[in-house]
Image (cartoon, rainbow, N blue to C red; front, side, top):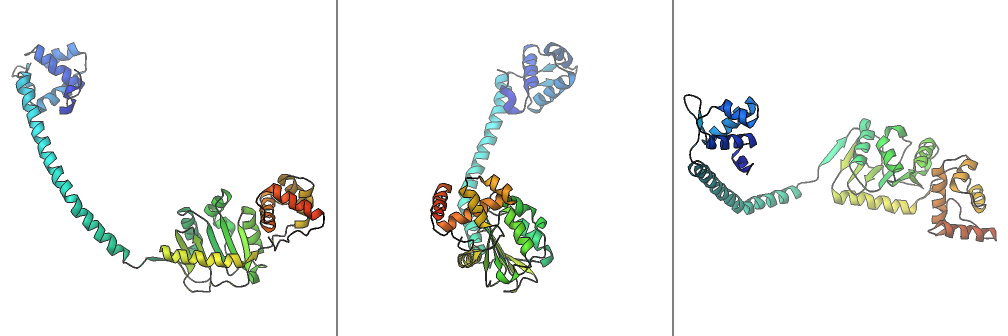
Length: 324
């Protein structure tokens, strides 16, 4: 039976005290506490709970007494049931109002969708920080165009670097005339895993973060000045489409890797790790170059690439780095 009075806010000690008073009315709290084996604080708390429900009374001499349970508890239960019935009526009226609130919500959505998309202007001085925020809050490939040699270091983009090293796709289009001044930047990002291509002309400088947002210059065709964050899905999709068209027409960026020497080592059966050690480049660079050769040969597996390399030993010409 323990725990039946919990619904009334009476704990186990209070319920035990109530049963003691029913069995032995007229005795003081201290006597009941001694028989229950609880502390004075616990007994007093239980007594207050019982008094709150008017289940136990204290006489002038300190003795505790209680009405017959059929009277005391029936009164409490009836009062609780009345409150419950009122609560159910209130909830029923609230349920009837749900359709009205839903109409208000629908009107709000329609009005907000008609509002022009917000654009967040970003000062050029904090562009790297904004790049990091958008990278952290988005998914999907990152697409970038570069019109000039970057003024910032790769270390200014720790979040982006970590994402690319973890497997996130990063593509960057470089303007051909800036390759010399951007060589250090290009090499560092290539080592991290950036996919790089070169275009003779680029319309403007911008970055697309998946399909979530785009970061573009406020002056089309220039990379100096302020930038703006674009979040409208149609605008972002237009930038992604523009980038993809430019990417297809561009050529792979030179990476300074001796492709012919790598081919010879691959024909000898060396693993990527061994090739990297022999050539003095990173394992990532070797794997990126192998992937480019697979694309150039139009094969999908390393085994198919090995067959193509064997054919070249018999006289065929291997695709150049630009063919990849």
